[in-house]
Length: 202
Image (cartoon, rainbow, N blue to C red; front, side, top):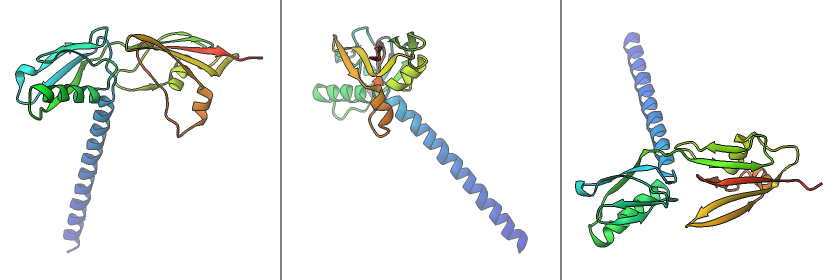
C-alpha cells in the first residue's frame, strides 16, 4: 500500500512540475510576443505581412526612409513611427474598408534595421548609440548608456530632437523629475533622436 501511495505522489508531483514548466514557457512566449508587438517600425526595418487565405496579398517589404511601405492593393501607406500592433490594425482596416470582409492580418518584423540615437552635451560619453532591436529604451536609460551626467550636467535641462511627420520637433524634459516619479510614464527614445543635456546654473 505504501509503495502504491508513494508512486501516486511521485506521479502527481511530476505532472505538477511539467504543468508549471509549460506555464512558464507559455508566459515567456507571451511576454516576448507582447514586446515585439510594441516595437516601433522605422526606416530600413523589413516587415512580413500575411493575410489569411489571401496569398496574393502577402508581402515582404522594407520600410522606406520616409516611413512608407508599398503593399498589394493598398499601394503606398505610412507605417513608420507606428508599433507593429498598430501597423497590423492599419493594414487590416484599409483592407476591410474597400477590399475584404473581416481580413485576418499578421505583421512581423523579418529584419530589424540598425537604429541609433545620439546623446550630446553634459554626459560622460557623448556620441551615437544603438537602440536594442526589440526592446524599448527610456530617456533615463539612454542617458545612463552615455555614462550619466558630468559634474555640471543638469538633469532638469534635457531636450530631445525628433522628426515627427517630416517636421523637426523639440521636447523639453526634466529627467530629474522623471527619476523621482516611479509611477510616472517614461519618455521613450526612438531611432534618430538627438538627446542634449544642458548645464547647471551656478
